[in-house]
Length: 363
Ligand code: GN1
Ligand code: MG
Image 1 (cartoon, helix red, strand yellow):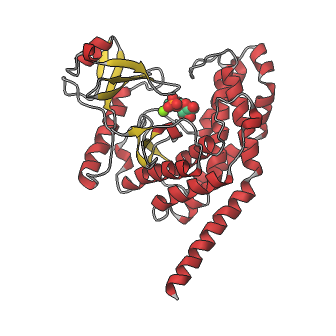
Image 2 (cartoon, helix red, strand yellow):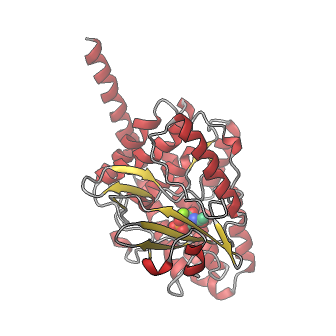
């Protein structure tokens, strides 16, 4: 397979080393490198991305726009194959190759608040760079991806079809998901109220989807653009809360290690708002804290739904994997909700300090 894929790009497989790369749950990724050149090769999971051409088209449309409006912005698009397309299809499998960004690295865990700051700034910058771009030009790459009511529907359906055994095993998270249905109600109200604008949103803002400069740790750019499509900013901010606030991530089986770091919350807010403060409307900003609840809850629902369905969506490495991930997210959600009024205070303090700074300048 490697020979054919690389050959389609005019690359000679014998000149490269190839190793699995990254920790994604959906696509397969490899690093392809020699002493001179390095690439990232990916096979797109077409069970999940039914029309992978839409991904390629979206990226191309955005690239054209950014080449004109922000030529210096680092946007990592796939390279062109000999056919002139940005992808190749071999035996019904869909592949693409990205250049490996020199001097860059990615991390799987947020160890320090600065890392959360740099990542949040990059995701904020991405949406800001595209705030005047017509979102309607983008095609959804997964229909209703972050549509919470639909995720709840899928959960209910899974409950109806699941085996007795799995329902018993997942009794606690099922009860919790049902107990917290009002998170979905809030979502419906929010969308109906028209408070949120459709924007170009990344939809998968985990820390490994940001490239950092090797020596300084400064953010370089965002990667993994498969789910870039029209959406609400709460998806990106919420997924950062979900994946940065606790050092232990969704894979952690010892839930006593799941803990919310307030300084990381403040860093996400700082980094994101440095880019997005002027872009977001007043009504949108009111959902900053809700964003975390929305995304953590939805991820819990998705993991438990997949467990009930017999593990058909996410890659798993042990039998209860999705159940543990779901329980992990419920634990995180409980700890997050216990901090909501603290988060409110932190944001209020940031805003007061800012007003204070403004008065100092006026005086
Ligand atoms: C999937 O494969 P990866 O890590 O890029 C998923 C995200 C989930 C995440 C949970 C297309 O992302 O929505 O938040 O797993 N992507 C898709 O780890 O479903
Ligand atoms: Mg992804």
